[in-house]
Length: 145
Length: 431
Image: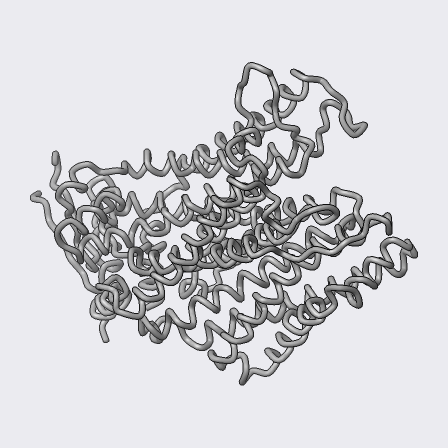
């Protein structure tokens, strides 16, 4: 089978063609889709799984939390001077730093994960952008392509 | 109009804003830049002469610099509320405001972050605030709320920048498609080669949700931490448990007012009426009204706690706030923050954009005064009557304060001409 390209102006026509192709036995691997905006129905049709991005967030968040807590405890112990009658390792204020670093590292790790999983930046497209504008596009790749 | 034509029209309408600037735009930009440059010169003067050129001295060691810091951090909050919290709640009207509100967050934080530095006696050693390995083995005191502030504001700024940039990616690709020459190349670089493939949209939607989830607790926590700069101390008027929620509500209140101040003229000058309806403004006006009620309640509770607690020092401070040296400002604050917003209970006024704009201006005036009163009166009237005093900002402080507004509006004007002010890819879902 040769590679075929279908182009639509409206979301409904695009979705019904996609449904038809999937019912005819076309596999997900053979499909390439381009969308002008995010269409959650496509993910439902293709039954896409949540993916690994959340693990980037979790890893970043956890390492930020533990790193923040570790930084506070390490620095407090490296000069153990009692101030204001507070314990050297004062957990309540240290938890604030740990929480903030969890948010910071969680966000940055998610962003890094996004770039990795979405394969961005795309070098070829930076130099010569290919764009389907406001059309919905389905490309069905031929076998072996 | 069919869907394709509607999407094309949306892009053309929104990208009209990126055209060559007109005379009024350039005049506005020049005026804001002048205010900012003036502030830089004054800051240089202060750095060379010492903090004595500012009006802050014993007993009022925190003046308008710290009031400005709290005010601008507060302005930032509404941006995250609109972009992240309303996204999680699936409020559709957010798409009319979120891009500008996110930009507002970043610029307000940049302005806010300058004030602790301006307030420092020796700004060249500001890096002592950061934890970095050093020969003396000295580290910041993580038990101090001032260090929590450094972490809170830095985290908030970086997360907001990432959130803003990720949100603009699909739109930057649209601008790239519609531009030519060097501008197309610049937008192509910043769009990272976005094509709109299913794989990219899939990761994008997941990332956006995750970032919204990370940013949402920051709406509550960052201004809570700023409030602890005061509440953790033992001064009358500051040492109170209601400060965190009170500050957060105040932040959303002033930030929402700033969104209205920015969006009313933008909607008119960029002719965005088809995409930002009066209903959307009414929804924002309801947030303004609701937060005004919370603020008014907090004012009442503060007085209730002071008098019910029967602490002489606390009672004297609150009497002083309403009837002392700063009483005119106090009552102006009550009028702007508690009384004027009550008129928004009337639907006709909520839907009148000129009226809403004036209310928003008054709210921001009132919120700036609130920060001033809260900071200055507690220091001017603490425990020992022998040490009481008053404070008047010097012309250096006033000039730097105006300069902060100049910097903020200068950045907003530059943003309007470089990034689409509405999120086109999100608005397309609504068409």
